[in-house]
Image: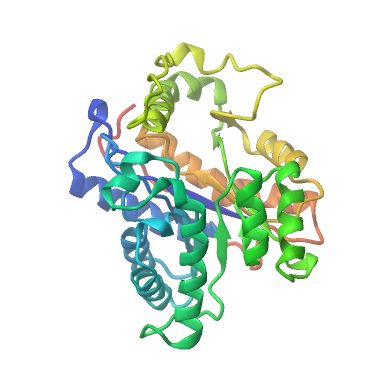
Length: 348
């Protein structure tokens, strides 16, 4: 299982940095993730968020590709239905070229009316359009329909789908499934069979709601305001543009009082040892190859971001490898880097 870090570039009003410095810091953290031994840096997509949620992941991926040497550069996820297939094919090919063949392209259907309206796309056709655009991007690459093409043949594709329809579609397309779920994996396997793909080609990954810390109890009250912002913005954005009333705001002190029988949700702050136990439990029996962790939650204090990146990149993989010695967490010898310093003046 490979480990990666996800950047969403949120920069909320309550603790906003100047935008140019904010993006410069993200690229510094990508470089450090590469140096530390992380397997991937990943970028995601939303539009019209007040906190500046990253709108164009391939643009930032290209910058990260130019600043790194070995780490995989991915999207988790990008919405193909908001783009012309030729545009997506060209932009993704350039990231693959700039990176020397390190692109992992995660794709999803999205769910927000305002985003689809912004690009003149039809939310009601999002699954059909997503499928059609993925197939067309593949055709353009394979037939030389755009130039230059990517280095990798094929570029690894992932489907970021959370329901049965999307899981089955990922299988039919023969791409990876970015969702760790045994019930959805059955739909994914069904899709693989329908698409004529061998069962052994199945591969699974996911964004895990985990932050690593040396002292989770001390980290929780510091992360809680940022997590409350993140969760409230997601909940409000999900109903924006619809007739559904906005849900009540979550308070910071409510975040740890989750129903133990409910979905594995919001966030867990864990030590590497506890995280490894959790991950081994939830991935048992699934062909999981990619684990993605938040690099930061909504611009949380910089020293916590730095330590999270260090622990994900350096401390967690040996623990996962020890549990599965026949399937190394990394395909190379890890190199320890110098201590990763927090940015001067980081918020605490």
